[in-house]
Length: 249
Image (cartoon, rainbow, N blue to C red; front, side, top):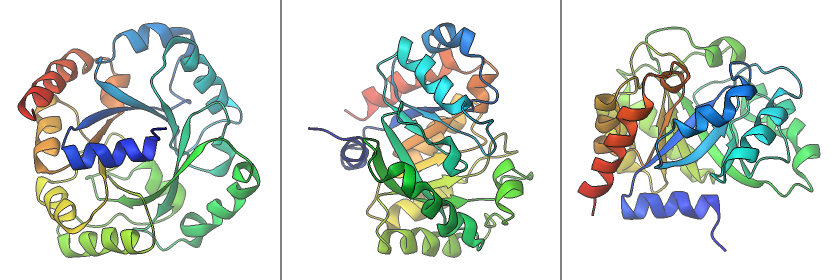
C-alpha cells in the first residue's frame, strides 16, 4: 500500500512537483472549512496542519472538520507534542536541525513518544531547517533559535546532509510564516543537488512566480500558508500547478 513517505519519494524521483497547503489552527475558521477547501487548487496534494503555538485541542478540532469535507491526506506539522492527534493521516516528525536548542532537536520528540508509541499515524522523520526570511518568525521566537543566513549556502547544504546521514526521510527548508522573502533559488538548487531525499520548501512564497521559481530550482513539494489564508493565491496557484504538471510530462 502506498504511504505518504513513498509518495514524497515518488514525487522526487518523477519530478512531478506537488503543492501543500499549510493551515494554522489558531488562524483557521472551522465554520468556513468547506468554502476554504473548495477554493484550493485541485492539484493540492497534501494539507499540513499545525503552528508554532496552538491552543489545546484546536488542532484536533481543525483536522476533524477538514476530514468532513476532503479526502486529501492531512499531515501534522506540529510546533509541539501537544498538537498531535490521531485524526490526521501522518505527522512530520520534526527535528530543528538549524538550531542548537535541545528541546527542539530531541526534547519535544521524546515528549511525543507516549502519544505516538501505539499510534496509527504515519511518522515521517523530517530534518527541519529554518532559513532567514528577512523578519523574525514565530518558529524563531518559540524555539529560541536563530535561522541560518541565506548567504551561507554551504552551511545549509551541510545541515541538510547531516539530516540525511542521521536517517531523515524528508528535508524541509523553511523561511518562516509570512517571511519577507522566500528561500533563494540558489539554496534550493544546492540542497537538492546534495541530498537523495525529497525536498520541501516553504515560507514567504506569495505569488505564482515565486512558486514557479521554487519548483524550477528543485523543490519537490512547496508549502503555501499565509498567501492562502489571505485568500489571494488559490486561482493563480491552480493555473500554475497545471502548467507545471504539463511541462514535466
